[in-house]
Length: 297
Image (tube, rainbow, N blue to C red; front, top):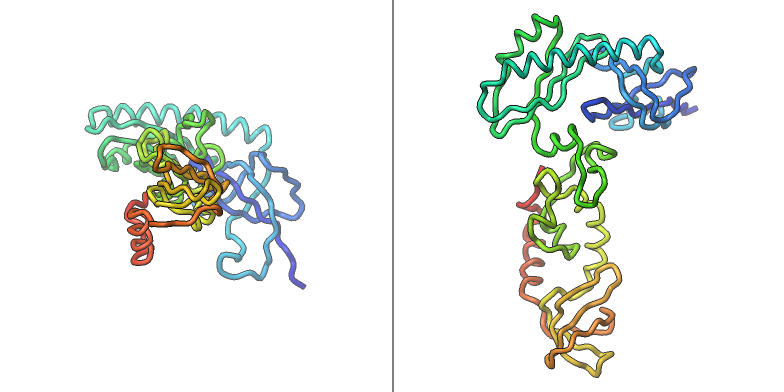
């Protein structure tokens, strides 16, 4: 009989997500704070979801080695609050140490693990800066191991939190747990103007959300003539004109005719007289190489 083991996805304060085995007698609900046993020791995280996994799975379906221990108790909450106060002292000490460093170092995140056997520090700087020489003093003062990392602009936005152009909290600090590659072609497929104000997020890089609907736009736009193509509009007495706009999801085109009119017609009611040069070049590039040189990490 293939028995299922309950597994939890737990989010840590650094936004990493781990899968942990759950004891059979433990009753949990999402969004509870729990103690988990990871490779570096015991730590506290937020439960995201529970699901079943086969005990005999292999590869990615293999049961995780980490364990979820229990929900936090009032005593645990007191210790976590004490850890936060101690982390503030460590943060101030580290900031004093790096105050004279070039690159305008900014400490974004500092905290202790539950048992204080590890101090996590995340910082940002305008240029790559190696601050490992300051770790020794921190380890002696606080008797712990220091986990120090310089993060990029995307991780900085995820750690500090901010509002996106849509007016909501950015995805990377609310629900998105992994950065996926994003490229300019995704913006082109969604008919977005290729200027930084439109396609860049609050971090200054391409918006993560460009990927969310890219596949739908790509599939819907496969049969549509591109902007600049010359078409005949059969619903308008075979008027000939140039495609100047596309509503990809609705399958409609805006055509500027030779006499200066603008017609909005279904894509199925036109025939292509001449394909746009950009569309030909794009098809050739996709055929030659599926890799994208614009891809961002």
